[in-house]
Image (cartoon, rainbow, N blue to C red):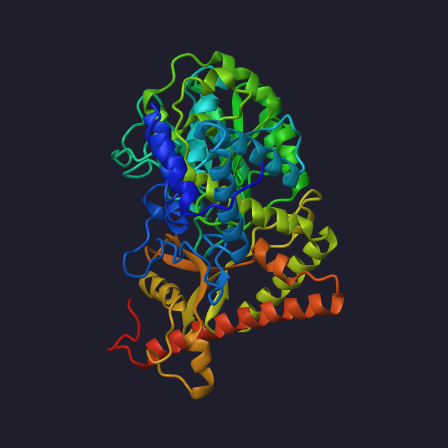
Length: 547
């Protein structure tokens, strides 16, 4: 049968057929696919995806459609969708529409989600025995991990969260089985921090910031984790231990030696889930985690640069067998998953959830998989070279700038299984004026001003006007409470997969020029930061940008 292009006539004809069908639910679901693509890409998530009615960007400064004129070094927070990813999402929607001419919407959608699981496993080079649970965001995936941990451990565990001061803002809520927003991705209004009915429990926070003055990783992270586990188990509780790889600053904890000690001392009593939502780890390390029986949280929207939000929970096959223990499902959890989120092999669990295709979540993952595939299509040797050269260049620029002070990297982070991620990809720094840190409010104002055309708003020379006009995104401020009571905040320059993909060329000389072009842009960002700080200092009584 010849495939017809999807125009208004095909859509109208199919919708007319469905109007006459008895399955009203399918009718409305197919109709949703004809919603404008930009609208679909920001639906099926929590309020963080909402576009500002004036600027048409979400809370992270990202629009729903490509904006190639914006320079993006913000992959620790969120990225603007690329043209290639946007095109893949558009094509995926067209193909699903075509399949829905011959199958029910839910059947076609379910099949596509299963294909995406296989594609993701292939890109990550993990076993077909690894199950993939999709979700609207990494935060939603944390609730999925808590739900599965209850089945594995046979009880309501206490969640110990490593890096509570450097993970997502929703984690303190999800760790306790509480709502992390005022609305779920499925559109149900809830009370933020209210208990998810049947899922609520206890949590223990293990921050990573040293209590000494300055910004550095605590030296006793392993000891703190062991104490928290031992104390919880002594109280007769099983433990879900959420470890960090990597944090908002690129830190990882606890060490492998600490994890080995936990496995030796408390076999079967501690289930580990890895917060790898930043996706800044080598595939060898990822496989090692899964081989040890850990669940792994990840997203396609941080390092890989897909549109925010797209979450996934990777589940080792051994844990999947525990699903038979699941009896009554926490009533409030039904608001956080639909049938297609679970792998097809989990037939018993899937049958208890509604058929509720989340088109926004699906299309964001289609876009993210475009980026993941493009990144791993680049030869490994070049990926390592690119990340190393970009890291050296950014470190040098921060060190040379009088307005930036680097946040120290954690010691002893690299391992033999890190592959290209032996190099840092997140470069945090605080802002200085006359050698002293600027306020959190001004740091936030600089972050917002970087994303705007500031030509005409700040006093600068003609030579610097192009710098002031360039819109660029960097990682959102990370707050640090200090012993002296004066909190600080760090911004972050981030290297993401797309920079590597765009730099790659089979022509070595061209690839080198591409890398230098990226470094030139980063230098441009540093100069704009300096211009903003200098302009604010020159007119302290008359702010040149919003504080």
